[in-house]
Length: 199
Image 1 (spheres, rainbow, N blue to C red):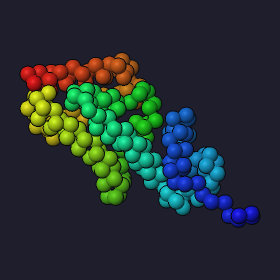
Image 2: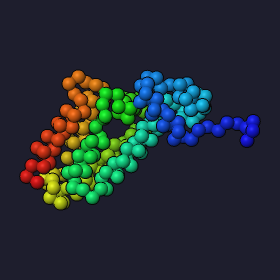
Image 3: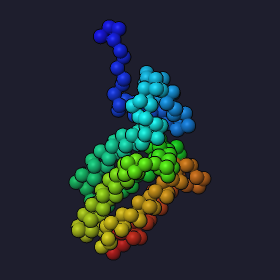
Image 4: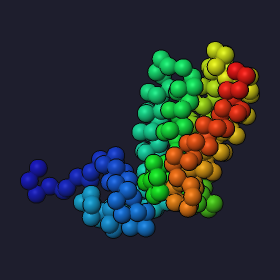
């Protein structure tokens, strides 16, 4: 309506813009003022909607995880051997490289979680829980089909995800001597030694 108040962009557009800023400029350049300029909102409006930068970052991570979760569901639902789908899971999990925007954001949110309230910590746990549950289900399926050794799926998933997290952090921060192909090789060897042997 002419002369009417300009509507705020949809929440998803704001979160997508935040993620794009992280990808293009790095997390340190993501300020409420800069994001506001990008989406045509004042920093005051952003604070009104998100309350704090911590909440903005967590919601952006949840939005990004929602997209990854949809991709993970598609990969895991394919009619393919469990091993092939496990490789796809690992491929999706490991960062694309140094300063991968999703992992950059993930690291920042977890770093800030030391002072987070219970609600924020529960939401972070929900993100981790979705990855864990999908992996446990895939392992159990592979075991039932005789593709994998008889391991405890929950315990094995916890250990595998700890390995993936540790190696992925090395990739995301650009630790010298650790890149994505090396990490995928380490994980492949680990799976062959602990999950596929004597299947």
